[in-house]
Amino acid sequence: MVTIENLSFSFTKYEKLFDGLSMKLETGYIYGLFGMNGAGKTTLLNHISGLLFPDEGSCLISGIPSRSRLPETLQQLFFLPEQFDLPAISADMYTKIHAPFYPQFDESRFREILAEFVVDPKKKLPELSYGQRKKFLIAFALASNAKLLLMDEPTNGLDIPSKSQFRKIMAASDLTDRCVVISTHQVRDLDALIDHVTVLNNGKIIFQRDIESISNTLGFEKIADDDNRFTLYSEDIFGGKAAIMPKSLTKKETQIDLELLFNAVINESDSINSQFETE
Image (tube, rainbow, N blue to C red; front, side, top):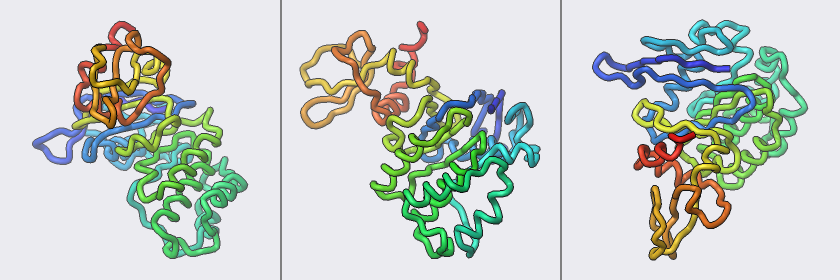
């Protein structure tokens, strides 16, 4: 779906943000794009959507340069930005104007998600809270059925119940023929939702693995302070430590802790990545 090859980009002539970045995104997967603020997540999404142009290299959507922004390409793409402005019209009117651009737009699914989010489509969009406007755009994005869905910090501005609703709605959506990229620094919000983890740091991809590979290679356990098993990374918690260790050293089947994994990759990327070198 998306092919990025040797992409280089800089905001100033003195320092490159991306320098030879390459990655591929395929349909049927939900990609979690993680990174600290300023890591380059939004800039990368802007390149994929064709809002920014690379200095060198290429970014293709279904073989077509994203910078071309051809109508047939844009019909395959929906980009939900973190910051947005919406016109002073109702949600119903917005949908009437914009939905025809997406050939596969699902009106009934759109209404279902709005109802789940408790968003009134009759109200003018500026009358809604920021969180309600965000939920409206999430509903529109999913209902568009665009093949490529880019979501930049979609849970920012959502309260805890709304974040739970977001995960539930995403899990209930048929995404088998779509490629979804969710960019966030709030890693915990995507637990049990994504298929693939990509960590971006200082404009470089420092970790790329699918969930199955991570589960087969790493173990995540709460251990006692006197547990002498080798750990790749650990953090102090109440009553012991939250630890990541080679899967062979775990005593039981464990669930991936995305937040712990993210912290480990940021602080000990070489140690974590070394576990996958024998694959």
